Each structure stands twice: as structure tokens, then as C-alpha cells.
Amino acid sequence: MLGLLTKQKRDILILTIGKILQIVIALVSIRVLTEVLSEQEIGNYYLLLTILAFFNFSFLNPLGQYYGRHLIQWRDNKNLSNATNMLLIVRLASIIFSVFISYGIYQVFEYDKYYTLSEFMLFIFISLVAGFHGVLLSAINVLGDRVKFITYTILTLFFALLLSLFIVYFINKSSIGWLYGVAISQLIFSIGLYKDIVKRNKFSIQKIKSILNKSYIRKISIFLLPIAITLFLQWGQNISYRFIVEVKYSLEVLAFIGVGLAVSGAIFSAVESLASQFYNPIYLRKITYADKVDRANAWNELADYMIPIYLLLTVFVIVLLPYLTNLLVAQKFYEAYIYATFGAVIEFFRVITNLVYMVSQSERKTKTTIFPYIIGFISTIVTLYFFDMSENFWMIPLLMAITNAVIFLLLFKNMKKLLNININMASIVKTFTLTIPLFCILFINNDNTISQTLLIISASGIYFIFLAYLVMQKRILVANK
Image (cartoon, rainbow, N blue to C red):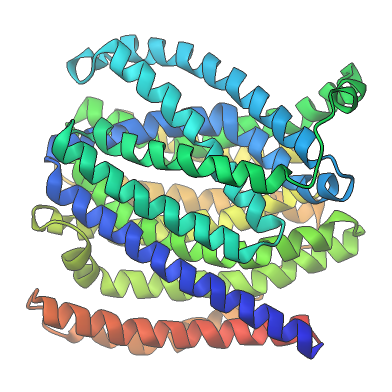
């Protein structure tokens, strides 16, 4: 037991150091991006990300989720090379289909005012191909190689930043130029990731042919179709607002809202991935061959750890936002911290909803996730489209925070019917009580100096890490009793 505990602590240390570096690079990227590009190009940046997210959520991510859910079984059966190559082939077919769809998007939304058709479609193709990097990176983590996972993550982000800067300064000072830097870095490191995943497995055409029958394809389709619908609705709920903002208001308004939500999003995504990168492989191993009771216990243990961490983070981000924004974005976007405040609430409900969503894949009953997201999607889109918020743009993220909370409640109710999952409310209350000292920061006069900003963020960050350590230490000890 002591050996296992030591390994877990070592893994957490490796992931934490790597995640700190990842956070630093990601946040530096936001600062540099907002410094070197104009407000209109920042708006373009978020518009392009919205389009890429549409294709990923609708056509590509469901395949990745199926791949991730069965990864351990394929490794144990020596079929990992076959599965990975099939995924690559199917993704390429989906990407080609997506490029044709992108032509329609270009025409309908009249994007000729921003890009040429060839420029737009080539960008979509290359960026979606580069997205295979994320699937392979996640696979490396699930298979348990922490060091390689961290190494690939840091190198990809670092070279993406360097390449983006080079392209923006010497080739094309635009949002597309910046995103090409990211895509090229992902493509380069995907080669090494692919080789590491398939190196102990042989590719067999015969094995693939033997399983590609109507029964198997129907089984996969039943699993994938509800996921695709749900992910599309997730995109509609959390990202599609950018289309409406660009059409109803302007790219500049989109830039400010996008930057504000990106500050909260970057911090939450980093902590979410740190938590999930350590605990998700453990969770997947626990549920792969488990009965229903053990699967419920596995999820409850995961939630007992992750939800308190997310609550700590929400309070930390909301309280520190004026200082974080001063540090993380260009001065011209400082007022975006107002949107980031609501963004923290949006992110809190997003990450705990994602946690609940895992139950549907555990039980292989993905249809039950659709209804909550339909409610959220329709409520958000209809309200944004038919109500004029030009006098109070902060109402846009407020609306999204409310609808995300509704989705969480509805989804939790549905998932509880599938599995006996529970949320430890006593633990949540205790966690919130521990955050009370952070609220003292609200009474400090913010003079917007770098020295004050660094001091307050550093002191608060140390306190947050201390509280997070207490939560993690408790979960580790419980897991190994």
C-alpha cells in the first residue's frame, strides 16, 4: 500500500509541475495574443474557434470518446494499433465531409468579408487534421505514461507559441496566422504520439475485416449518435453564442466577451485537465470490468475529490479576476474581467456537468443526455437572438451561467436513474467555508500595479494550492485504505 501511495504522490507531483508549466504557457499565450492582434482580429480568432469547435463536437469528438472508452480493452487485447488506425481513417473521412460543410457556412454567413474561400477551407482542413493530436495525447495519459504525456503537452504548447509569433510577425498578422502556428505544432508532435501508442501492437487488416460487420457498426452507431447530438448541443450551449454576437453586434463585442470568458476558461481547463489526467485513468480502470455497484462507487469517489476542487477554484477566480485580468490580457481588454466573473460560474457548471456526463458513457446509455442539453441550447439561443442586450452585454454570460446550471440539474437527475450517484453536500459546505479568507481580497484597494497584482495572486495562489492539497490528500488516503 505504501508503494502505491508513493507512486500516486509521484504522479501527482509530475502532473502538477507539468500543469503549472502548461498554465504559464497558456496564459502567456492569451496575453501575447491580445497584445499583437487588433480587437477585430481577436474577434475573428474566436469566430474561427467556434467553427472548428462545431466540426469537432458534431463529427469528430464522438469518435474520440468511443476510442477513449475502450482504450484499455484494446490495449489488453493487443488491438490498439488496429483501433488507432481505424480511428485515423474514419476521422479523415469525417474531416473531408466537414470541409464540404464549411463551404456552406462560408456562403451562408458571408465570410468573404473576412477571408477568401480557399484560405478559409484550407485552414479548416489543416486545423481539423491537427486535432488528432488531442486524441492521441489523451490516449497516452489513459495508458498511464505520465512523463510522456507532460513532455508532449509542454513541447506542443511551447512550439505552438513560438510558431504563432513567427507567423504573425513575419508572414501573416492575423487570427488565421496565429492558429496555423498551433496547428503546425500539433501536427509535428502527433507523429511521435502515434508511434508511442502503436509501437507494441501490430496492424492487422484481417482483424479489422473480421469485426467490420453490420452488427458491430450498428452497435457503434447506437453509442455514437446520441453522443454526437449531445456534443452538438454542448457546442450550441457554450460556444455558438459567438455567431449571434458577431451577427447582431460586432466582432469587437465578440472579442471582449471572448477574452473575458477565455480567462476563466483557461484557468478552469487547466485545473480540470490536471484533475482528470490523474483520476480519469484510475476511474476508467475501475469501471472497465466492474459491476453496477462498483461503477457507482467509482464515480462517487471521483466526485468527492473533483467537485470540492472546482468549488475552490470558482471562488479563487471570481475574487482574483480584477488582478488576473490585469496580468493576463492587454490593457485594452482590461474591462473584460466583468464577463470573466460570469465566466467562472459558467465554467463551474460546465466542469461538474462533464463529470456527471461520464455516467452515460460508463453505462453505455448515451441517449439520456440529450434532453437536458436541448433545454439549455434552445433557451440560450432563443433568448440571445430575440432579446436586445446591446445596453448590457454582461447579460449574455449571465444567461449562459443560468442555463448551464439548469443543464447540470436536469442531467444529474437523469444520470441518477442510471446509476446510484451522489454528491456529498457536507463536503461542499466545508470546502466553501475554507474559502472565506479569500473574500478579504475584495476589500483591498486595487491600484492596478504589477507589484500589487503579483503579490495578491501569489499569496492567494499559495492558499488555494494548500486547500487543494488538503482535499487531494484526503482522497488519496481514503482510496488506499
